[in-house]
Amino acid sequence: MTTSGENNDHRFIGDGSGAFRFGSRICVLSMALLVGSSAWAGSSVSDPHSVSPEFPPATTYGSTMFRDDDPRNHYQPYRAMPIDVTAPVELLLQKLWLTENQVGAYSAALVPELQELGAALFADGQYPDAIDTYRRAIHLLRVNEGLNTIVQTGMVEQLIEAYFELGDFISADDQQLYLFRVRKENLSPSDPQMLESVEQLADWHRAAYLGQLDRYRYPRIVDLIDLYADMAKEVEEQEGEMSRNRLPYLQGKLRTEYMLSVYPGESEEGLVVEAGQRDDADLPDLTKLRFVGFRNDNFRHGLASIREMRTILENDPDATAIEIADVMVKKGDWYQWHRRFAQAIRMYQEAWERVAGHSNADNWRRATFGNPLELPSEVVFQPGRMPLRLYHGAEVHARFAVSRHGEAEDIEILAPDRADNQPAVTRGYKYLRDMRFRPKLEAGDVVAAESVERIYSIRY
Image (cartoon, rainbow, N blue to C red):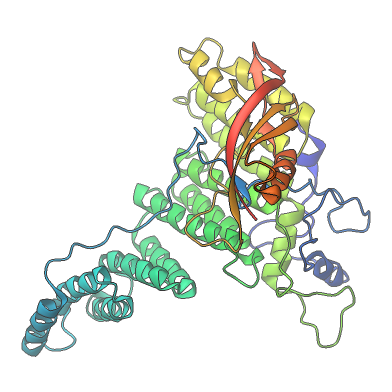
């Protein structure tokens, strides 16, 4: 059955390159990108004159609060393994000098020795010199073997690590984008290495977004949506609409929709757009317009990604009942996240029934619905490598109940003691009240869960 939310027309864009209706809406769209911590960060917006009058309430679960021991993932940010060091820096410098005198300064024969030298300099903590060395090696590869040779990717990863060690996140960001372009030029969209590269770049974008690397944060969301949508489209063009290789990219797009759903607005030093169009004010650029379109249709786009995943599996004769039930749970989670409780409960119950008769049904039901689980069900808001711009951290041990609607009730903060850390206790209460859970099911019925104990890390 289709919900009213699924039937809403896309108001500003039809697809990634759709036509826009500018006209009198320019000022309205400009108003949507307001500055300040209040922009899109409070409770649901009910102003009938707003661009999107029914935004879901924001959750603070994410960069400010996360569960370290979540049983569903063992997330570790990607870090490139260092290249083995074969000799001291001084010896490698002498060896390089001798080789360069023999073959010339632009020979590809210098690349292995430059790579060894870069690794030694990195190991010694001489990061600027390591960067210069790796960059020279990459330049020689580009001159001798072509601009986008895949051989250079290992050294580009080392460049990223060196820039990160120096705290030069902007340069590391540039190299991440370059690394992805090189791999995309050489790998098929269905290649497992390509998927790994996409997730590496996506996790970097996610960490940069949560860490507020950029003055304006919203382009990261647009980049993530485009990244996954483009890759899913490429697989479709090569293998057909029902290719299972589209599934990871559709799932990545859904993760991005979760991020978009609680977009907090820009910081005070960020984007400033006033209600009236002034002579000296810039018109909204294409990225701003697309972001507003994505933001307005966030709920519908999330459902569309889930619907595509289910359609692919239902057209695959090898798909199992558990695979299809997992996608049904994703839909229930998306409803739950947007506080559409009746639709979420119905979907959870249908997923429960879908696995009936499967040999692993009991284990799946226990893992999926045996205890309340924090949403989203995948790594979306857990901080990555980028330092978060927050000043305090604490560990909060809490006991609470979870209602049939997946909301924390009767919250008791067991630690820290209020006298020791009043701010952490206050925020622990606040964050838990905003958190959303997938509820517990017993015999296919959604039930309240009593005396749930969890330990969360909070940052503020």
